[in-house]
Image (cartoon, rainbow, N blue to C red; front, top):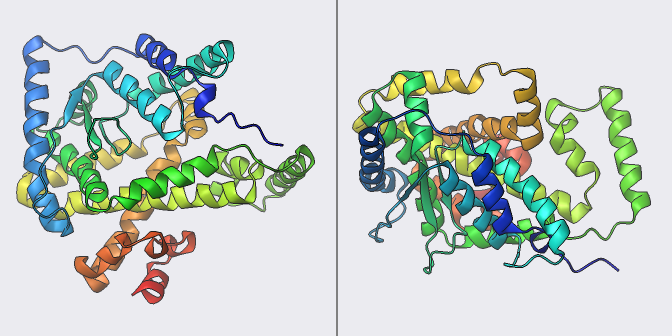
Length: 348
């Protein structure tokens, strides 16, 4: 009989937040004035981005605009650990204090590594006391990237907000999305009913196919390994989350480019330099960590998802594209992300 202890209850999430905050690298050197200016401009930009995003997406209507929370890296880590606790059904007290501290430290270390690369994030699971989620903007990272790219700070801050506000509109206009994600995450983090023999057999098959060159680049990497040790329901849940993530990120990138020219004067320069930054070669250790954490898979989501949204909107317009947000049945299937016409034929 499978254990009833979930992943969420096996982690000391408060400790994860503390460890992550302690390990986080300091942000770029900046005066108090620069930091204060960045915080104020990001707050204003998040509000300013809402109207053009709603106009382009045809979603959101006249719903009130919630304030964004502008945080440093430590603030993002604590918010992320709290959100992960909610997503995985965790509690304030882990089931085993000792192992909870160990897994908490591991989780905190991962969050610390990620924290230096996050510009912003919409968290639909944040416990804010209302039904709405929380839009987080990480101002030290925004300052660091705009300096690296040598672009207008005001333009870049608004450009970042266009992407993150699109995520807020996606979830606030379609409340079922958060529940769909939560259900898939619940399956993904549940104890598998498969016995060890079945898992070992799938893993051996994965290794054999990888050595024989029978697997594509995505299937041979960390995602392929994950599928090898998962039960069939977990594999389905993983595919659901990957497809949804690809759609959400691609849609946000599409909206950024559609809105950008009208409100961000230097949008083309920002886009070109930002894409070059995404594609630059990383040191070996960095590449390994990125692979293990799925960072490169995330970047692939932007490219593939935007191509899907661009194609469908170009063919049928934004209003008909928005059929995608109707229910889980109208979300694209994995093969439809690669071939948008198949989604059009099936759904529209």
